[in-house]
Image (cartoon, rainbow, N blue to C red; front, side, top):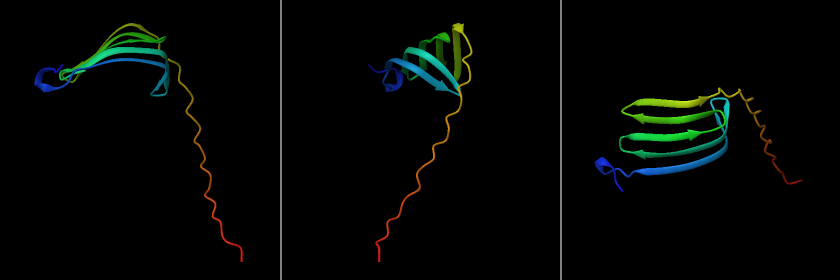
Length: 91
C-alpha cells in the first residue's frame, strides 16, 4: 500500500523489556504505530507511561494517560581496551 506522494506506509509492533533514553530507563515498553508520508503515530504503553504520540507537519503531539518520570540510571563505566601485544622473534 502506498500513501500520498508514492511513499510506502509502514506499520510497526515493537516490544522491548527495557529502553534507556537520555539517562532514564523505561520498562516493559510496547509500541504499535504507523509511519507514512505525512508523519508517524504510535500508541505506547510501559510501566512508566502510556498514551499516544504523533508527529505531523513538524509538530510532536503527546496525549498521555499515565506518566511517572523514570529514575536516572547510572552511566556505564568506560571499558578499558586491552593494550595490543607485540611479539618479537627471539634472537
